[in-house]
Length: 349
Image (cartoon, rainbow, N blue to C red; front, side):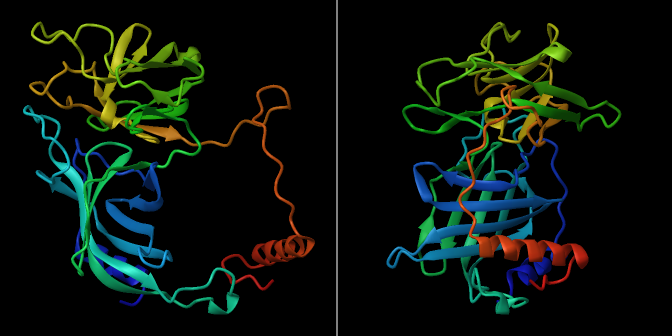
């Protein structure tokens, strides 16, 4: 197959996608399993379409391999496997998923050889890939190669390298991502509702352990003092669910403004950069209660550069850069000048 870009273009031209209100939309970014870092999957999600790139290594030679796929994000999943369906499935279905041909890239550009400028890589079909997006910040892949080999039974999570990750001390599975920073919440069920913005600058505890005992009910509280808001996340939240048959709430996060709970999110719906929430408090714990409440609210992390502050006043300390060879720096300067002189063209440097 000639060119990954051509394959994706054809797939997108043949299908469209309409997002489901309750379905978890995939976050763009790198996904991996911390205990098996030699394999990773990158997902780019744009306007109902998905591009996938996988890095892995040949089992016999150890050589690096790149696999590619692309096409529409489907929103009609009702039984994809890899996820226990709650008995009361209100708010659970439909689910987002993806299926497409998996191709192996070859004959692309070398990393440092500029004469290959403009040459497209080849990609040959090797099988089928299926992705299930059941929870925020994770993906369930199923791969069936044409040679009979397969991959299943693994769940990949977002690769958190710029934000802390708190994991189950026994299984090393992700429990929570760190939610410090700015977030904007948009009520997608009410287009007339104003967006809510919060800047969580304080966390309690200030330095949570990276590994949490599985038997411990760990609680994280993020505070926005300027808006009198706090985001309280726990496996066993405080408070009564309001259901006399099951007073315990489902594990997750609740956003308080003052003493009022304005929205909540199941623990599995809290991702690295995206929170799928709903109006009101967390529902009662157990399979016989709604999985997600209606009135969906989407929270997105606002990614901003660290504030420019004087040394010693909270400015993040950066490590010194590695030594840059003089010839490399001179070439960099020439390239920057060429790009500024003729943006979009191949830099002659």
